[in-house]
Image (cartoon, rainbow, N blue to C red):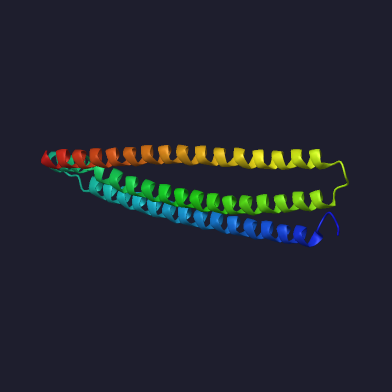
Length: 187
């Protein structure tokens, strides 16, 4: 029996290529969604700008100028639309990040299993007296795996903290926009 199994190596390479294809698809899907959101925002901003210019062209006297200024004070409604687009962008990015993390985690798990198989195969075929080297190799693989798991937990906790902060900021901005719109409409 050979110490190195080329069929397993080829299967691992195929698995890596499949994972790369999945990652590429996820990234392109996200770029497509972000591009659509960008076009939506641009279309909305352009439409609002044209409406504002049309209103400005209709200003003929001081009273219509005052009405025009009052209409400009309704800008918080536009910031509400911007806030919604920002939420959609955050949603796309967070879903993409989660999907990529899930793919990376499954690939790492598979890679770790394959590495353990290789170590076991080498250990079975190793010459006498190499047990300390094999034991050190197994310990190094286990330590690397533990280190990765701890890093992954830390990143997940940090992501949850950031997500909570973004949600709180979005909520505060939405409340401020609503309050500003109400205050402006009372005037």
